[in-house]
Every structure is written in C-alpha cells, then in structure tokens.
Length: 454
Ligand code: NAI
Image (tube, rainbow, N blue to C red; front, side, top):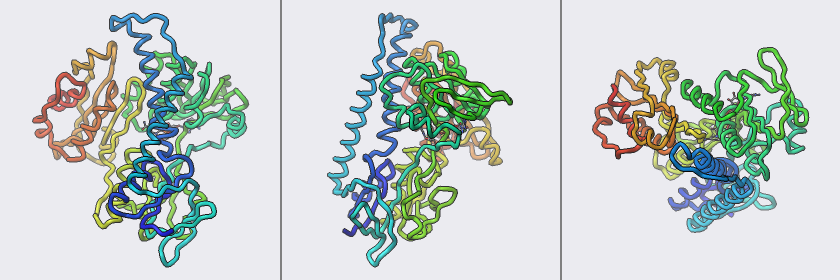
C-alpha cells in the first residue's frame, strides 16, 4: 500500500501528527507497536495524574481538620485507585482510536522498520507487510534509561526494580520504596507513594532535586516533602543493588538500605534503534534524531517529532512539534520555538515554570530583574491552601521591558502557567500585561501582583 505519509509511533507526536495530516487531506498510515497514546497516555502523564488525584483527595480528607471538616476512618484503596486509572486510560485510548477512525487514518499494530526507498517513496515493514510513504514522520518516543549499576538487571527480572511502567501498576502499596533519581518522575511517584503509605527514600546524585527547576523553588519542595516524611539522600550515588538491598555512596561512605521496591527514574533516552534509520541515511546524534527548526531530518520528506529528537521530552512539546512538521509537509512554513514551553511537576504542591530562570537568563548575558513574592499575595491561595508557603518568581528583561520567565510552587500552578507562557510567547510588554484583567479571586492573580511590584 502506498501513502502520502507514514507515521511511525502513536504517542502524542505520532497520533496528533497523523490526525493533523489527515485533516490536511494526506492519506496517512499510523504504525504503533503497542497502544495509541504512547507512554504519555498509557504509562506516563495520564495514569500518574490519575493516581496523584486520588492521593490528593486522600490527603485533603485526612488533613481536612485545618479547614474545619472532620473526617473519620478515612481509608485508601490502592487497588481501586489502580482500577480507576486503567479505566481512565482505556477511555482516552478509545477516544483517540475513534478520532483516528473518523479522520480515516489507517492504523496498523506492530513495530515498523524502514527498509530503504523505492520509486514511490520510503518503504516501511511491519511484520510480513510493507508499506510505502512519500513522507515519513518518525515519532518513536523515548524509553527509561537503565543505568549499568550491578544488580539492576537482576532486580528488574525479579520485579524489585521498576520503571515508570511497572510503578503505575503495583497491586499493593509497598511498605518501603527507594527512588533512584529525584527528577520529575521520581518526585511525582515519591508524592504518590508517600500519600499512599509507603516509606519513601529518594536517592539523588545532585545536591538538589527537580533538575533545572528554580533552585529556591526546589528547596521549598524539598522542605514540604521532608515534612511529609519523605527521606532524601542528596549527592548520593547508587553503587549496587542486591535483591532488596540498595547500596549507595555519599561523601565517600557506603550505606545499605533495605527496601520492598526500587524505582529507577534517572532519565529517558530517545528510541532510535532497530528502526532502519541507516537504510535511508537519517542522521542520529548522541542517540537523538537530528532535526531542524521545521522538524525535518537531513533526509528530504523525513521528519521527526517528540522525544525521539531529544529536544524537550514533554508531551505538549511533542504535540506542537508534530503540528510544525505537518504544516511544513503541506507547504506551510512553520518553525518550532522552545522559549515558552511550560513545564510542570505534578507534586502536591505543584511546581510550574516557563521561560528563563534568573540563572539561565544571566548565563545568556541578559539584563534581568527578578520579582519574588509569596503566593500569599493571592487571596484565593490563602483561602484554599492552609499553611501553604508557595512562591512565585517573575523574571523580567530590563532592556525590552518584557516577561522572560515565571516560576511558581503552589496549587494550582499547573493550571495557571499557560497564561504566563502566552505572555512570553507573544512577547507582551510589562505595560500591556498591566492592562489585563484577571478574574478575582484566583491564584493566577499572583502574576498580576508580581507585575505591579515592578
Ligand atoms: P529526569 O531527567 O527528570 O531526572 C533524573 C534525575 O536522576 C536527575 O535529577 C539526575 O541527577 C538523577 N540521576 C541520574 N543518574 C543517577 C544515579 N545513578 N543515581 C542517582 N540519581 C541519578 O528524568 P525522569 O524523572 O526519569 O523523567 C524522564 C523524562 O520524562 C523527563 O525528561 C521529563 O521531561 C519527562 N517527564 C515529564 C513529566 C512532567 O512533565 N510532569 C512527568 C514525568 C516525566
């Protein structure tokens, strides 16, 4: 069969790319090895947020006293939570399947492998069948990095060492959980399993958690987490794993921790192996498919979007990258911009940020001013976050008088941050932001408060 476009990989970049392409009238084939929705929908963003929502309800109920509500005999049913999570995932996967069907995207289940070119285009094999596409969109995503630590492989085989996939499907809450890596996945899972009742220890090799997160915000998160009983071993490296024992080294000293389960969350890497990329000469650099600002690889009509290009590793980036690719495929010049992509850590409290931090701005030689204010400047935040100690930071370009970055910790930061992203993306001047009317009372008003501190 011959197609205008073959999409390999049905995660956020792949399925949305296929839908957009079909919308443009391209006869499109989507090849997915497992289930459409990819990691995000099946074993990432959506299932983790479903679990975290149950944990949040549980925490609100257990600690509702401070809001004047007393709840007795509050119980947590993890098995039921997992069951609901599976239902949520099923519903959304079914939704995507029906959208693909309605858009007349052909879906083939199986792993696609490129096998070169013929007169009609690029040839892709799935099992015994071959397909030809005049264009390709490679959207094979990423997979967890499994570090070469002695004992990890055996731990995976025994079901003691888990990745983001298995941790979302545990039938029982482990009594103890060691999380290797205090990045996004580690912190979200620490939040969930701490609420669900595990004794959680996070081992992180850096001296801070949350990766690139604004340092002051990651300190506040750390303080909040410690208060909830999560243990942190910072500047610590796991040396080996032996059954249920984790050996880590910190300041030259080795310590052994016994634990029920171990989560490996030390990062993800693009999936580029066994794809036959070499058969058409697609350039791979440091394990990532190299693309330009339009999503095009070094080969004509071969595009790549999402985690596989290693640029941002976020589902929402993947959506936009796929759209940029499709726009260029149909002759509408479009480019990808990365300066206003929001990022959220769905902990409780939530952390959200967009744009430059003071550190990154200064590294770029920009003349910036930072406004920092307590989230308590927002009446709604005070009303709804008893004892909350969140902050919001605005990074302002002094030369052009515009917003370059917003960083906040406090609920519901995840729902507010897109407003800041909009201001940054559209390069709004401070004087123009001052004229915006925010609904009152909302936590989002914190941005307005911050702007008026200038
Ligand atoms: P990550 O890159 O966010 O964090 C990995 C952490 O592990 C880093 O802090 C690193 O210093 C640490 N580390 C690395 N090797 C270590 C070792 N041997 N011992 C101890 N610590 C070590 O990676 P993570 O959390 O696995 O997430 C993967 C990707 O998934 C991220 O790039 C993220 O963008 C994406 N993701 C995004 C989410 C969101 O947007 N809310 C949620 C979950 C994942």
